Image (cartoon, rainbow, N blue to C red; front, side):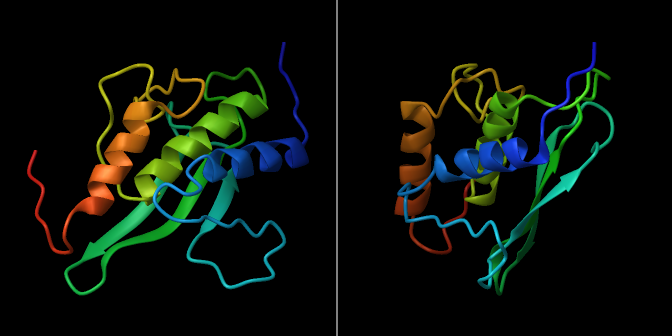
Length: 145
């Protein structure tokens, strides 16, 4: 049976996911009405192709550094089960916001929101520590895998 969730509930869930990073490392504000100039937008797609349900679109240049172009979130399950549940959307938005803030790699711990398949229920202490360590680096630091 396919489920249907209202667009407003999905928007509220996505906003909550983005705001999970508020204060880590700086305040994050979300303008749901589009009244202010934004650093990037969250865009909805019916699907993103394959099994993908969220993506942070970024670009890198030596002059500007990492620029976030947008977050794209799928509204529909890639498995044909209907609209994603608000809980899933909240976690997807939190995961993609982690990428937007600079965590480009995935975690190998399934309890972290940055785990590739996002089985977490909220941000973990490790997610916060990773963000703190990332923003403590001097500007221009090179990180190697």
